[in-house]
Length: 121
Image 1 (cartoon, rainbow, N blue to C red):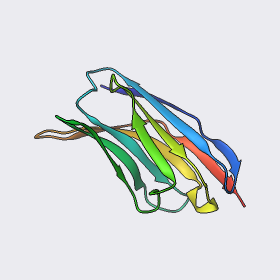
Image 2: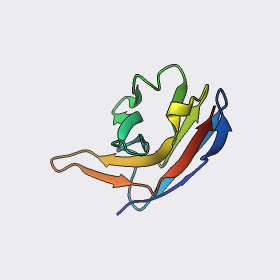
Image 3: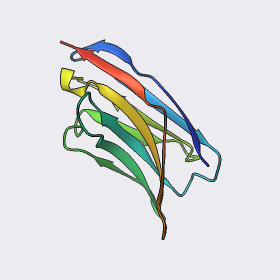
């Protein structure tokens, strides 16, 4: 089992910034993927950004809506991920969920409890 603790959500005006944190524990995490999804009211959960493990280190992936505004990072131990969000827009308003994806023959996903981000216009 993997447990995650998310923090950093809040209310910010359009154009502002927030930094989300997710710290995970419960198993070896250095060789798993960690990232963020979000879910706005009345919409499906959508991908935001991910750090994917490889033998050469972590690779970052972004949704089109997050490119050039959001930056995802991972700590050296592999058990924490951060999402720096700049130039926030009202449409970024959502609950942001940390995701730990354990690849393999039977992939497993673990989800955090979510942190609310509200961007006012």
